[in-house]
Amino acid sequence: MSFFNLISTGGLALAASLAVSTVAFSASPAPAPAAPAPTVPAGSDRITNPVAEFAGIDKITGRIITFDVYIDETVQFGALQVTPRVCYSRPENEEPKTDSFVEVDEITLDRKIRRIFTGWMFAESPGLNAVEHAVYDVWLKACKQKSDVPAPDAGKSGATKADGAKTDASKPAATQSASAKPKPTVSPDAAQPDDAAEPATTDTN
Image (cartoon, rainbow, N blue to C red; front, top):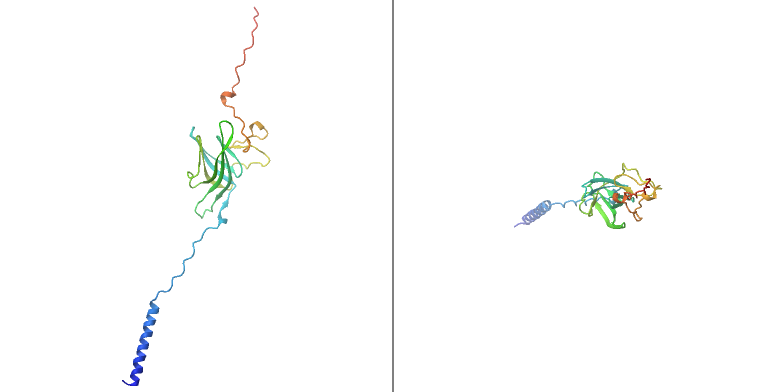
């Protein structure tokens, strides 16, 4: 074999090895771009609301009502006093999530106030953490920016009833503070006056 044949054979072998390397390099897949990290809604997207809307049922009469309560105010529904501390919701373009931190007190038969619930209520899952009472149930319906119920006056004290009626602060006997011991309620039978004694009759005969 001549010198030129050796050079030609070596050149062909080198070219073939380069071609194989090029094909192998081009056949190897390009690395896939990294997937973007899932976006987590920021805590600032949570909306703080001044009004919490509740629903309540009287199990004896079957009556169901809804009532609004301003934050840090107390509304009395039956024998229960409901006080929301915060009420959060989400923007309309996000998954609904409405919750409120609520305190519920019961006015017992011996006229004492007893705390029966302190915790979070969830409007999307009303049965998860609702207040269950022997006579009354209460659960969260919504958090709102405004209410048809007038905002309580800062200079007046007194509890608001769930039906929207407000006590008159100028009448102490009718005023019920959330922190004070409730005044006894007179039953309709007890409110009836005692039988009046018949006046002595004078015999004119």
